[in-house]
Image (cartoon, rainbow, N blue to C red; front, side, top):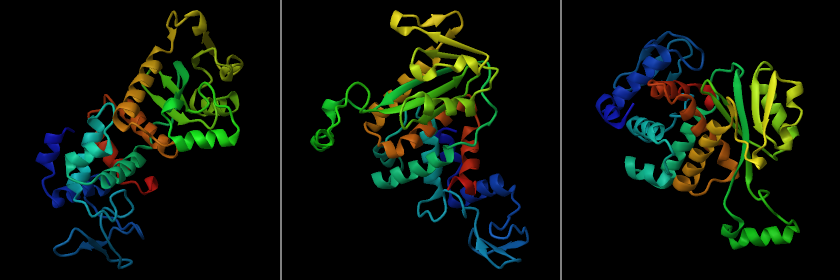
Length: 298
């Protein structure tokens, strides 16, 4: 749903509430506390009174919208803007677009990213599955003086990619992707993620990184590309699709967000994952709203 549609369809708080009630309850209110459907609507409010437990509730109880002081129209607008921003949208830009300060915009984004987490088809990846790891973070020379001092005092000699955060990516050629932050890039952390995500009947394609060694004993096929010798394609086997996604991800992080803390990195990965997996779904706005209404996302 684009911005103009949001303006047209959700011009008032009442229209937003009515739309959410249709998604969550199919317009038949259900008490979130006792699950009773026997209730009456309170006069001049969007709240309902349960006839069973006598609790007062609204469609927002237990969702990412609960206790919000912002009009739902601004939430809907923020969701639309985030979904349509292929490379992401900074909190500063979102704040300017919907008329709130940066902290409020960041809060909205983190709640919306929470709704983007998981909830996809849990069927194991099949067919050809590309697997690759990447590293997120700036060059050491761009780190603050305090961070460089802490590194020197720790006595550790950081070289190569050790000062960056490792991320594993698994991409099914059918169109799904999974991203996960790694504590450390080695076989002990990578192989369990592959085992939980990929069917044993799948054909895996990786580079020659040691963390992937031995996968051919478990899976139908394991094609290892020797990129040190400039072998990037072997017939239909390559990791170009996933590497193209890494480019999109890093352009978003470095170009839009500039800096992402390790603590919140997985939330940003969830956003890129959701948008990639549902890029062809014209109803992704409704899908995300449905997830936003699920109590389990909190």
